[in-house]
Structures are given as structure tokens and as C-alpha cells.
Length: 194
Image 1 (tube, rainbow, N blue to C red):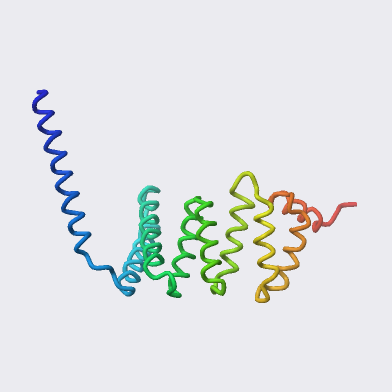
Image 2 (cartoon, rainbow, N blue to C red):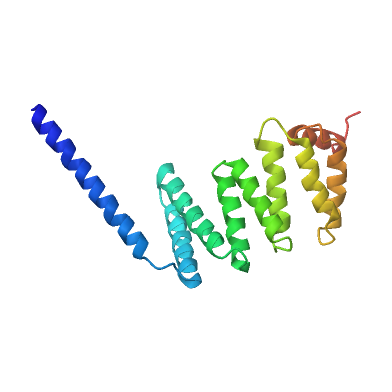
């Protein structure tokens, strides 16, 4: 019996070593994917995720699929860092990590997006996402970082003036969590009973 277990273990190890060797040989021979092939691969994974999320799938299946999408998006960015589509990839990675509750990674990708593509079409949403992660999900709250992101929005001429007014009010009470601030704001707006 013991000999059988040893032989089985050896056979499994040999199979594993052989398959790893084959895999690395194939990787070395593979040509890099073109932009169009990478984009098609990303689109395919996004479509697959849409299908999975509409079905009753396990959380593990969805998380693995989201991670595969993140891998494809970051692969595109690594191969074509200056390409305008890379900005979309970074934004999608930021949102995906946020959805996976990996808020520190989400913020890091948001920061990369804002640094590499400062005129990105969804930069306001990227900044607001970072603010939400810092103000709601991460402990301890980093009020200096929150203030920094709000200051970016205040300095942006394209950001709506009505939202800027709310940011100025929020910055006066930055020491309060967003929930405490919302409660305080709601109590000031509600009519008092006499």
C-alpha cells in the first residue's frame, strides 16, 4: 500500500513537472497579442461577466471572473501604457477593485489613472470614487487625503459649481464621517416642530 502511494505521488509530480515544462515552452513561443486581440479578449471577459452576473452564480465564480477581467485590463495597460484605451482600462480596474472591496488597490489604480491621464473623460468619477473609499470604507479615515481629492475637484473648471458648493460645506466638517455629516446636514434642513 505504501509503495502504491509513493508511486502515485511520483507519477503526479512527474506529470506536474512535465506540464509546467510544456506550458513554459508554449509561453516562450507565443507572440504578443495585438491591441485588437487584447481589446477583443477584454470585451469577451466583460460579456462573460455580464452573463455570469445575470445568472445565479456563486460569489467565487464572479470574483474569479472579475479578477480575470482585471488581469486582461492591466495587461493591456502594461503593453500599451500611452494608448488612450489604457485610461479606460485603468478606470475599469479601479471600479472593479472597488466592487471587490479592495479599496486600497482601487485608490492606487485611480491615482495612476489621474497621473497618467489627467484629462480623462471620467476623472471626476475616479476622484469621487477615491473619496468614497477613504471616507466610508477605510479605517482610520485619512482626512488629509480626502481633503486633497476634494481640492482637486474644486480646482477643476469643468466640475459643476453646485457640487463645488457642497464640497466647501463638507470641508468645513471634514472631521465628521460622511454618515455623521449627512445626519447633521439632514437635521439642519428638516423643519423644526414648535
